View (spheres, rainbow, N blue to C red):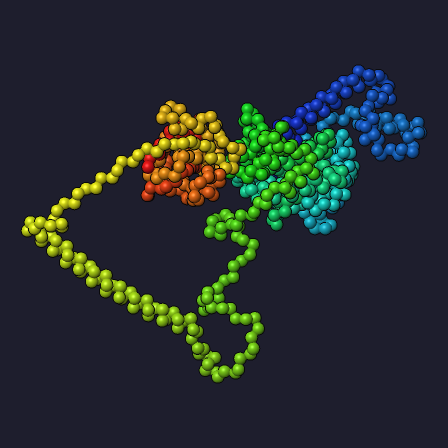
Length: 619
């Protein structure tokens, strides 16, 4: 159940079995269909073996189902023949119930256990419903799951809820009560009105590296603690991870969500670990790491397989990308060790380099201001005037007229003297400029007269034109792919095609599912001239379409090849189009040039890809 959000209730036959808006995964649907098929096959066998005697019809009933149905019968009285017959009759009735016994209908305003008043149905499925309710005894909001007591999952739901209630970890949404009452089983849980689920947080785009790191760290540590206590979640989705207004993450539905859906408990550690990996992958890329679309996130192409997040979206933190790949990819890339348990995941997170929290810019809309406030300047006090001490000796009594007309503070006298000096300097400058202007006017008029009279001289003779030397081509020693936050060089075998004097051949980037302008990062080519050379222009021909690119040069000595974008200064030239003609304001002396691509054309297949055909450098 997602706190702080309202889910639309859909009671159509196509409704997927879910808590809030979380749809079933492919594995869950397969498990459900398998369970129903097995139940149907068992029912057919029972029908074949049933005789006229109802006692014989009860024999094939599964022992677990009979135990569930026979709970109200005292075990000490089972030895009695009459009670045994009654228990058999109950088993027959239970066997006649449908496999998906619908939850008893409840409406807003109904009360559960004369205490919990139902307010709003947040989710409805064929098996259970979820509500926001009010605990009238304690006057607080709570969440409620309702399930038919005769359903085969009822006992497992009660056991899971009672186990979760004993967890006692504040990082999990607390289970407050779990009771079977008549034809109804209800589970009461804590309600967090100020929390936002992860699916809602990702609706606007991917998370910043620091926020994704905080999410995966807190969730992994909580799930690892639950596994140490013998409990597991088994259905950890973006709807189950809630962020409070203080930035803390709480996990909803531990054990209960899986029991409501009848999910098996095999490989619980691996299931929960991969679920955390999916949350991290979605937070970094804003994509669902499987072919299907889930939680308003587009799935990856099936042909792509499992790829690290930084191959889906540029600019992703390398450590977090490797972490997600170690969890989800089998085998992980770059010969990394796989992560299969929450305990291993928490250790790997602890070894990550520190990720610093970005400082928000108050001038940009939509960003939160820092948690501390800058003191406002006090009226009448300049920024250089010291603040008065906290405690000062009491001054001697002053006459009344001094209190009513205090002495003018020293900063005002300094400001007044500064104003006088400023006016004096300005006046002198004006006089000087006027004199210079008058002299230049007189000189121009004298020169004009000489030219009119035909007097020969320097002023009257035309100056010879100075012709600039034509630029000389600079030989390119090599070109490498510059992708500091990626997995390494892209298409290294194509790099010589960028300076082979053949516009029909080209080097291309990898395909991005979003343009670099949306990602907020770039990729490029590092051109090596072999030695420090004067460069006056760089021409680049693109093959794929209009491309936005920048020309950058290193800020250091240039003795070694740069490896990070911070090794370069700001762009000295930029261009958008199918060709780029970079001409710096003045020739630069450098060995390395960076052609930094910041916007790529769409290749028509749903991806963005840059193609560089030719690079020409002139000095």
